[in-house]
Length: 148
Image (cartoon, rainbow, N blue to C red):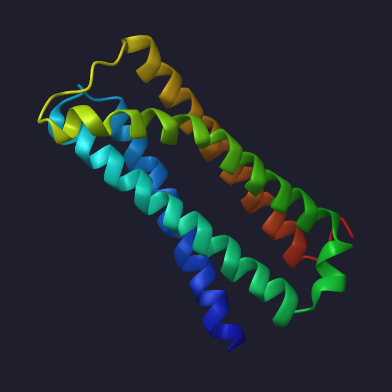
């Protein structure tokens, strides 16, 4: 079971990174009806991946691996978990923006979005990717037994 949950954890993490990367590419293109639809769908997939990643990750903490006592006393894990929560908070802004597009998209119209807003969305997505780099660093430090 431990191997299965480790695999799922990595699979979901890679899927989450892929979703953010796809969103970044799409938000930097000309906004069309097709692009808006894709962004809304990809963001929904991103949310599902993030939720499942949290569930699988916490399952590993509490029921597999080294046990909750080890992880909650490990500074690298706490940093990793905190950055994950931070990324979730940062991702609220793009999600809310994409959700506001649904009415226009359902009507077959391109959402009216200012260029400034699209640049802001790209900046939020860049922040999410930087956070993921920090999470990767923390994972390596944890694997080496550091920051305990």
